[in-house]
Length: 114
Image 1 (cartoon, helix red, strand yellow):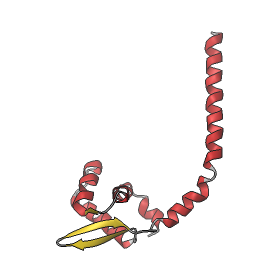
Image 2 (cartoon, rainbow, N blue to C red; image 1 turned 90 degrees about the horizontal axis):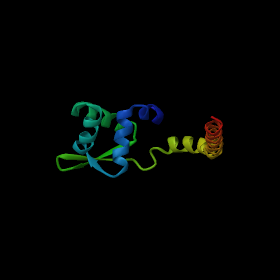
Image 3 (tube, helix red, strand yellow; image 1 turned 180 degrees about the vertical axis):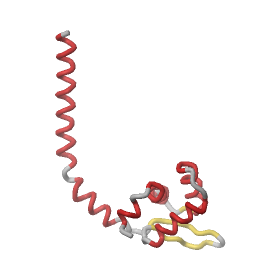
Image 4 (cartoon, helix red, strand yellow; image 1 turned 180 degrees about the horizontal axis):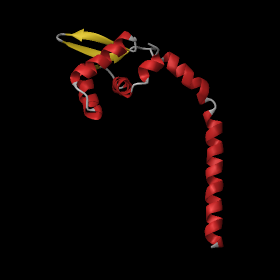
């Protein structure tokens, strides 16, 4: 499964966000995800398994627990894709800012005319 397909699921995206802050146990990940999405621990485990199989997340056994973390560089494909298009954003945001300012000016002129 491609990184894009894996990250298309909002639960898996949230798991990645939680793990971006550092290593967590399955229980810690589950606490966040179960509350936000109303799913049970088995569903969280399935999402963690899919992320492991996709090599986005890795698990490290510590005693009877597993600590999950992001695999360094695992999201490089996604980051490269975003970076390719991010260069266009400043131009478009500048154009949007110009249009918003124009709309505010026109609204003020209409209010003054009334």
